[in-house]
Image (cartoon, rainbow, N blue to C red; front, side, top):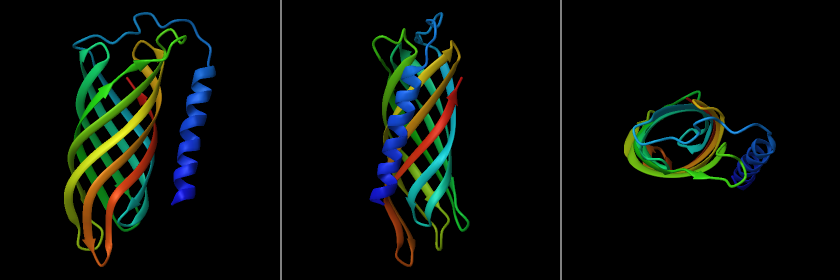
Length: 176
């Protein structure tokens, strides 16, 4: 577990470093304004599910109420050989522009609350609290690449000693 978490953190640091090195002119109209809506989708892994590490897919919708503040749903899907897990939550995000990047690079902390269901063994549905951070790199006005680390807190208990109280995940994605 410790090795996997360290590898995930190293991946986040590497992604942030490589994205920060990418040169480019300022993005015309890079600021997102109140009323803008973006959709993000990503693929990666989710650890510590009741059936172990899973392939993960996430989709989120961000509705901007202020230039740096958005809310919206987050849908999470995790698959292993023996289980399917689905989570849905409402997320709040704050978008920090990194100085010296002409608005291209942003750090995005987020938190939310919702529910999760896993089909392993007896199956279970529980509350879900995803907390995390994204590194978002704006390629054009309406296209960004990102890396997102989420720590999902829950109380899943699918029987026979299988359960989950926290599930770390990392996805690479595209936002448009």
